Image (cartoon, rainbow, N blue to C red; front, side):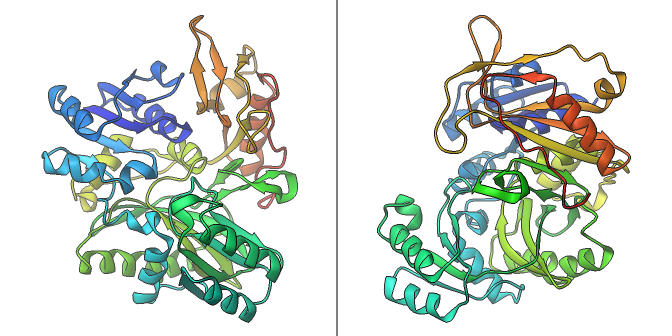
Length: 422
């Protein structure tokens, strides 16, 4: 198979790495890819959807996999499908589950999927009135895409009102915030659950837990994610069953009934409150960094999972996972998440420890290749050190041993990834 991967982050690197080890795959392209994806395949400097479809046609691409949310919301899947090309991901209409928080919350309400009490509004007066009816903390969300940063957890009524005002004025997130969702805060523990869907059938991947805050003990500002681990012991069969019956099945049925069958990754942000899974949000692609831990746990060929989902044939797929744990630690640049940092050369020590060499790897994200052929840290989240093991502790220890072998000026990472499970 020849495969084209759209995107440039650690998530797309992890998907490419899984496909590189798949004997069914003969060639991989990345558009645009990053400074390290050229070790897995070929990078393309093409962004226009029609031009990408032209490339796929001309080069006999069997499958295109879309990593990030923006091209999905903008309709890349529609462009490819109109040309008869096989592509993994939801149409623009179905991608509204992530593209609009208001659409998503109203969809959940229509189909009786459990979610927090909320109001959607573009009126400051209505927002204030609903904020006054809630106990702090209070959650305020911009409606549109904000690169994972459009959610404010306000610790007081005043802070919630300020966040609502800044969003609705367009000052905080521009157009994405001119309509907002205000909702009650749910107190529990958070999970990331991913279902690979083909419109009717689905495969649930091992549940993961992400660490959103910059600093240890979940302190500091929210980020795109500072590390994750999977599977999490915080999910039992009862929670999986409830998610199946109350969330995934009604969502796929509802999407089909509303004329937008869902194909691709349904990323379910779950808060478990007193044993009950309540839905915080849907995304329509893999989480990053969760994808970096899930891909190495996949035992069956990655190409089969993606291709059968894209062609509506998941019922005939035999998808298996390794009975192991994976822990990923994000190494970020000096000024993340506040501002961009100057480029810094990445130096990786030669690994002599056989245990580390065989059970760890790096998924590269915010990196560029210099004219000297060296890799440089040029993004916020630079790379993810992934460790595998028979237990979470073993996987975590290996991941941190790898962290110790990676150097660049100003590197920062959390030292407590997976602490909830340990």
